[in-house]
Structures are given as structure tokens and as C-alpha cells.
Image (cartoon, rainbow, N blue to C red; front, side, top):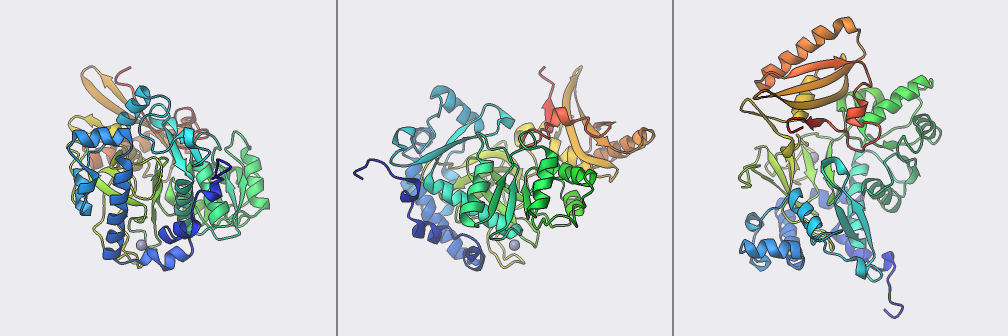
Length: 462
Ligand SMILES: [Zn+2]
């Protein structure tokens, strides 16, 4: 091009994009209902193409050459099992050796004028932030996947939606923004987090503009309901919430806001992977964009359907930075491919069940803090917050879960006893329970400041 640069909207063939990754609402009458052979044939063809592109990226070429794998040898989806996996530590090492971007990017800052890109970084919940470069195509597909998820959850074109995520180095707020504005023609009110726009102001805005969703953590949304009540507003009668695209305490969210909540799964490098449908029997994977596998946390071998292990993810939609057999170390399992009650054949996965690298071996039993939290909180007197600490006492590892309640301090003893008994019964080991008043864990969980509340601290090395 003579002028030497392309604008983002010139860098994408939009009819090709919408054919390959159908936006909502059309998606739910077309590719959402695709038959199993058709789904897998499309996956295989995209996988082959994407493998060849990944092989041009030093990070992948090095690993694949060392393992004797060549992308031209992919003939079936099962061949994916021969591709070496990698995990977050490998990405961190790549960044250390090749700062600041690592050698895993499939796009370049040097070429940004011709091939416009955006750069976002992982939230630092687990270690130093990891940058990812997104081409314009990658942004658009990511936004389409998010738009599908929001549509399925009840957001409709033209709705006003409050985006209370942090507009910062992280992908999340922008991905929602692009999905809503560009693919659903929604009106986005960019409030940012409670640090940018006070909780009272967030509530006022959602109320005055009759927003149909407030995008933020489930915990913060519950907090906003409390603020609304303090302001004399009824979360169910005075607001117009139609969707709860919020991850958190489902039962409480639904009870407080009176709207169904659907589980979802995704992470910043690959964007939105899966979403629960109204049948609520697992999260459908957007298989035009991903191949999800479940692998053994120790042997890294693929696990049979139904068994819990690490999510190993391959994206098959990008043109920029690849993620090809990324062992993300989130725990889940896969359902066999079956037709769902909603009519879709898309593969379903179980909701996020914890982090494999947070696993604590307690007297020979593998324990995940998220599981401890879920069991401990199974008492209506408890607030939906918890924090787990692992400690070493002498030669023994111990675990304590901290909980909060609004109940009278005189009942603490009884609540603790109940929670300890539930944990012992369900997990087979003794876990200590400590209880305190509402808000007392906020500093540890960073619930009002972080997009992902912190739930675990390993104090054994300290
Ligand atoms: Zn379904």
C-alpha cells in the first residue's frame, strides 16, 4: 500500500471473518447447531493451518523440533496429542530470555503500521504479567466469541451495559467493550472499577440508565446490591438487569438480582473459551475457535472423558500469537460429545474446579483451595468469601480456611464446628476453620481491587 500503513478496519476481511466465526444472533441458528462430523472437520482443517503458523514462531519451533514433531504430520485431531505441551513457567522463561515480549509472539511491534496490533497483559494473579500481541483479526474473533456469550446470557442489541472492569493493561474490559459496541450495538457505560467510579455512583448509573448487565466480579456485584439497598433501592424491582455475566456465588447472585447466571470459562491469552447454555449441563466450547483437551497434571497424557485434570488448550482462530497445547493448569473435565438439551453438539467442559499449581498435598490427599472454599461455604449463615492458607507446623502441613459471617459472635463456635465436619467428611482430612465479621478478609482477597479475588496463600516457604 502506497501510504505505508493500514487502518485496523482495512486489515480484516469482514465477510470472511463472519463466515468463519459467525456473530450472534445468527450463530445460534447456524454453527451452534452444527453436527459432530462437521465440527471436527472444520477443527482439523483450522488446526493444520494454525500449526504451520505456530511453527514460524521460535518458541514453538524450538520445542517441536526437540520433540521430533513437524506440523505437516497432522492428519487427524488425535495427532494433537503428539505436540509438546507448555505452561506458564515456560512463557515466563521466554520473557526473561527475550524481554519484554518473549519469543512466543506471532505478531510484531515493528510491523504494527501494516498489521495493526494491540498489546494486553495477564493479570498478575500468578507471577509477573505476561504480554500478548493481538492482531486486528484476533481482536475481532475474541469480541465475537464474547458477544455470543453475552447474547446467550441475555444481553440484547441496543441494551445499555455498565462495564465496571478496569480499563488498564488487561484484556478483559476492552474485550467486553469491543464485543458490546462492535458486535451487539450495545451502549457501553465505561465506569471502571470501584476505585475509579464509587460504588454509589455505579449503582446510580445502572439505575438511571436501566442497564441490563453490570460487568464485574460476582463479589463486587453482590456488594453493589448491598449499596443499592442502603440507597433505598431494590435490586430486583428498581433495576433492569437481564443478564449476570459475572463469575461468583451463583446461588446468591441469582437470589439477590433475580436473574439466571450461566457459568463461563476463558483466560486473557485466548479470550472466551466456553459458556453454559440454559440446560446447565456443562460449558459449551466454541469449537470454531478452540480444541480443548484434559491432561494428567503429572504425566501430561490426555485423560479419558469425565476425568478431572488440567485444561490443555489450542486456539485455532488467531493470526497472531499462537497458543498451541497450552497447559493452563486450570482443573476441569470434558463431557463426551453428545447432543445437548439445547440442540448443540459442541463439546462441553465442567466448570473451573481450581488451579493445579495451587494444589496442596495434605497428609497424602490432594487438596485444592477452591474445593475447600466451596465446601466450607455450604452454610447460609456465611458470607460468600473465603481465604485459604497453607502452613507448616513442625513437620506437618496444615491448612486453615478463613470465613466471614454476619451472625452473632456467640454462634461462631457452632458454625466453625459444622464447617470443619463438612470438610473432614468430604475431603478426608482435618482443615481448620476460622471465622470473623464481614469485610475482614478484604485485604487478603483484594476483592474490591482485583479482577480475580485471591483465595490462597502458601506460607510454607516463608
Ligand atoms: Zn447446551
